[in-house]
Length: 143
Image (cartoon, rainbow, N blue to C red; front, side, top):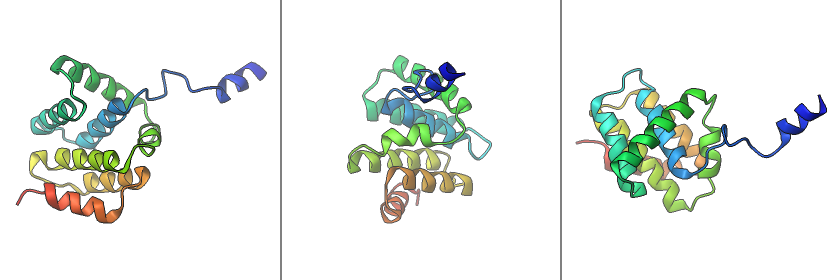
């Protein structure tokens, strides 16, 4: 029993921890696209495109990243494992993450209330102000 408790409170298991920002962001974007119950082709293409551009990845790297992010998202019980490390990034990087999220939200030209709520929650968790989140939303929102 003591060994089990020691393992529980030891350093995070590599299987459950998120190793880098790209995987954390990808998992959030994958979840965001699915939060309204429908993942459109436009959303999938947008996720791949923003990840490729933002993290300077090749197409095959993006495909692997999205597969792993989808797996991690399915195993996650909340956003904490994805947002805890992202909250330590510089402000401009945290703001860019919210910008990427809005790009996925508006990829299908719609903004479902569940998508809006998720962006709000993630922004709060990573320390992006309501004002900045709203500014980004208005910049990305189709006219």
